[in-house]
Image (cartoon, rainbow over all chains, first blue to last red; front, top):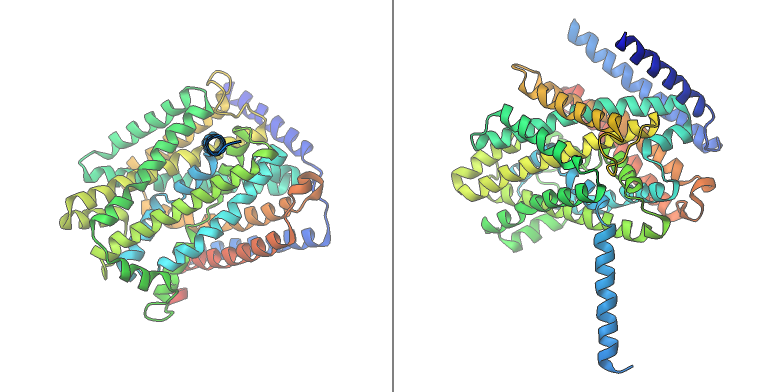
Length: 59
Length: 422
């Protein structure tokens, strides 16, 4: 019961946080959009590398 | 006004400025000295042992780099009154917010394990069993926050920071040739030419300079200390003093191992301490005490950085000025991080080497994002007003961030694929 309450409370909290920060404060200029897009590509590149390493390790 | 009145007036003015500095200083000094954590000490000890004094110039270059990056967190914290985690949520929305927070939690927890590895290895040299080190240090770190006062915590931590300077007398005891240190160390040079091994050492030194937790820690610390816009100049002096000291300590470690252990491959600082003890008992002891202190400072700052970040985002009471009863989640999270990461070191056959390597890889996923967010937030005129980055600050900071991202990425990838650089 306690664990269920804990997860229910935190699920509601996360939902509340998502709602609170739904709209970014920063003005999405071209430079900001480019920086964020580059970050996404960079992170995808790293995730692919990590997956490759994991697969080669398992093999 | 006669001469003596003017002299007295100047004296009072200087005393007042020094007192004010000691009131406001703290976050910059602590974060920078804690940057020389267990991993950092190992890197510098290994660098000195491998290349002697030849790479001291790298540290000299890194001192302003540290300052420029961390100084931005002072302005951002003092102006927005938000920690870095909350600033990312507010600035870029919940996707990037959750990404940063989750990544920070993982990388901080793993780094804390490495700090405990450093502390247990250092005290093991003096015959203290690892379980006693973990229990004892967790207890000390918990007691330090029980007072419910940021000021008390900060001053105790500054005492531990002072202990980090132990390498300085250690370096004088090995009687290095000052002329040789200046001749070989100050002029930029690449001993033996730029080969893979040297490149790895350069990356390791640069990689330890800026860690993701440092950005989160200093900004939250500035907010918890309630620094205001008018305090920013002092915050900058604090940060510069910190970056100077962190560089100084690194240089003195290189001098110690570069004088006594030159040409020897070193795997960790504890091994260096044992080897130094064979030459001079006191120097080896100083090295071990310094390693322990570095791990301790790292653990306390990193666990606080995480607790502050979660507190900011989840809306918990998250200040060291609160008693445990007033901020149970904040302190609970802090205790959980300390105890859980300490326990890992005690697990028989735990993959500690793998964890140490994995830290570098995970840090690479967070550091670029945190640095890019920092620069973008510092360019947000709406919130930063007159404290927005100037053109020259942007040129310097963007150049630093691009270089750090490139180097830390190559460092992380080479950790993942060791044959890449061979």
